[in-house]
Image (cartoon, rainbow, N blue to C red):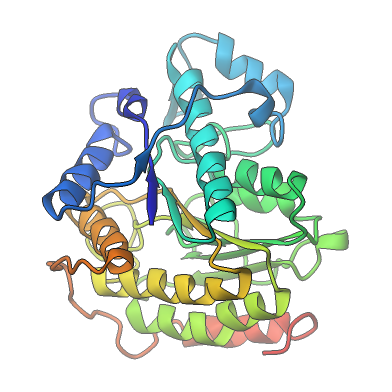
Length: 335
């Protein structure tokens, strides 16, 4: 798995006590170096205005670029350097996806700020530009016909869903915790117009973890993606679903996270090995770091010991959600 990373990402600081901090990337980089995995690390060039225009309104882009010191929401501040770093994060996501297309193997965009809460003309939830949506649109413009986005962050990717809700070229699948920020991602919502049936939401109650995610993958995610027959898989990779994460209360272990990554990589054989992971959330730095290192290590034959392996959900606490989701999707997919 190739790694796309720029030192500039460490320069994004909303405030000294904000959970989305440079320490997240520093922890990941240190863990990768500890296990000899800081190899094939590729930087991106300066973010391009035209790349952002693939998704975002020009007036919104210009606001981020020119507002100086302001705030989009209480938890999403804009500083003078925000535009350049956020634009570079989007460019890095595109470069990683295009690399995976050329090479036919996994890539990982180790970027920040994250992106999946950003819509065409708004930012929120620590996000300014929607990295994964921009990458998907770039692939479509490059000739791909079908892209799947799997969003495994604990928070629903409201921006990504809204951007592609009326399109059939992008299949959006989200596993997230129900009843928390941003309040979207309802199980019954399947998209609109031409996009009806191409949005899949699995909102899980607090406490759901390894067994729930394993069953969801086997019963919903894998069969829907297989029937969709994508040209590429893009993953909003959030590790705030971990039981050690301070911002939510799902219960995936480090082993459960790594298994999800491995299953998605196996599934990418249906699109010639094209899969790109893009960092979203994850705010317990030791858990975040070991999951990323173990996942990348598994693609390179390197065993990374895991510390956070408690199995909290071994009885599929989210089975009711999975069953309801299958019923909702029955008009569109064979499950």
